[in-house]
Image (cartoon, rainbow, N blue to C red):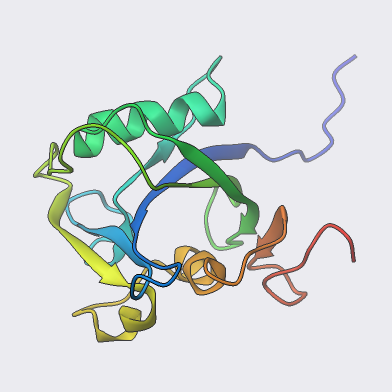
Length: 169
């Protein structure tokens, strides 16, 4: 029996924000990349390491893999931040589930590994995001804006209801 339920495809991705400072030692800073040549949000600032979760891979494993592939760091001590369920009804694949992590420790010096996709890496204070020479990817900006204060385990972006809602509401 072939039943069409008009189902969509959910695309999972993992994001890693390397962070430093905060906790009484100045502003919390996050490492961002300036995207280029990808066809998606080029000329926007974004997580220094992020990408799709591959078949058979956990989001945590994807975060480690992307950090190594994109900025050359390993041995990350990852902390889970939030799961962001987002939509863009104007795209053919309009449902995304993003897993956000931070890391305060890692091995290796962050550097650009994929220069055709990343124009620049820059440490940016969370309170200076508006001073960047270009916009931050909108759904990532929503996460960054809540990073210091803390975010619920589940948030949403792009739905009719307000953009950040906890699973307890």
